[in-house]
Amino acid sequence: MGALLLCLVICTQVLIVGTVAGGGAAPRPPAMYVFGSSILDVGNNNYLPGAAVGRANRRYNGIDFPGSIPTGRFSNGYNIADYVAKNMGFACSPPAYLSLASSCGATPLANGINYASGGAGILDSTNAGNTIPLSKQVQYFGATKAKMVAAVGPRKANALISRSIFLFGIGNNDMYVFAGAERAQNRSAADQRRDAAALYASLISNYSATVTELYSMGARKLAIINFAAGFNAILRSRLAGLAAELSGLVYSLADSFGFTRDVLADPRASGYTDVADACCGSGRLGGEAECFPNSTLCANRDQHVFWDRAHLTQRTAFLIAKAFYNGPAKYTTPINFTQLAQSS
Ligand SMILES: *[C@@H]1O[C@H](CO)[C@@H](O)[C@H](O)[C@H]1NC(C)=O
Ligand SMILES: *[C@@H]1O[C@H](CO)[C@@H](O)[C@H](O)[C@H]1NC(C)=O
Ligand SMILES: *[C@@H]1O[C@H](CO)[C@@H](O)[C@H](O)[C@H]1NC(C)=O
Ligand SMILES: *[C@@H]1O[C@H](CO)[C@@H](O)[C@H](O)[C@H]1NC(C)=O
Image 1 (cartoon, rainbow, N blue to C red):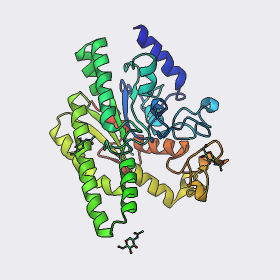
Image 2: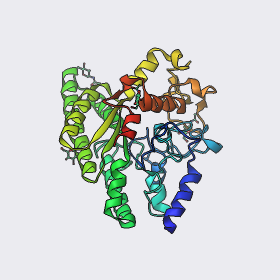
Image 3: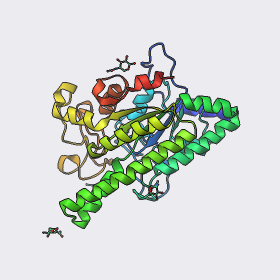
Image 4: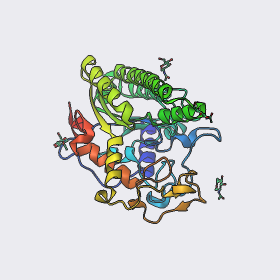
């Protein structure tokens, strides 16, 4: 109990996500567990050793976060994990797993936990050694569940997990690393198509295995954010198949790629004036280096789609989470995040 209280305090101190949230009269899910890459990382990479680990623990990251603190989010402020949590009614965004492990043993009972790690892939080989791959994130959830069972017993733990949200945003780094390797090998167009098909097959097989494993640990509500056009169709059909096989599984597949494509096609409709330049970076379009303290920083951050060369601004994260939570309907299938949160 002491440990639980300590963690609650830490969680609240670190991450008040502002005032409350949509969700209406329906109670919020008991917790949210977050798996993914830098799009959802809220600070796990700060705890990984090694100079080659991608970290956002320096300015100008976090410049629009309360206190202008670089928290480890690859953003000028909050990211998509924070805004999904807020929309679902959480007062506190689920904290970074490794931040809790170092202080009080990662209690999961308050809001859930975020395992996402910058650079992470669906495949263990993606940025190996410099990230927490999806398979390890799932193992960490297993450790979390064991603590929950120890604290409240298996029945309560399973009931809580089955009503909780499992948020995913991963796959972008697998594609990125793959594209780099293809370029380096100077593969022909036909070879690249074959290689891409093989990559998608292994991604979908590993992603399905992950879903099945989490299901066996009690997960029932999946919110899955996707990032690549080619992979979306495959994932869509595989998820439909899994939901048919695994009784009680509900999911919402959210189309981040489609959302960004639409924003880029008509940026002014969403209040953007700059869709090409990274707000923080250097060189051509701010895209030749990461966001460093010596980078050029834009002044109108809310009018930029991209924060740095690989990540979205806080405002874009806000708009994406809002779209996934409650429309337009074209960005989520077969249900939106509101329906997922409220499903029983
Ligand atoms: C992915 O799939 C391959 C082959 O199917 C397997 O060897 C590997 O262990 C799987 N898991 C990860 C996380 O890469
Ligand atoms: C890549 O392959 C093309 C066609 O096979 C060839 O013309 C070109 O010189 C190659 N480039 C490099 C950098 O190897
Ligand atoms: C900016 O800082 C980075 C990281 O310390 C360094 O690698 C880079 O050379 C610096 N750029 C300039 C233009 O000073
Ligand atoms: C999202 O789901 C909620 C709850 O069922 C529903 O009221 C709302 O209309 C949906 N939004 C869209 C855009 O379909």
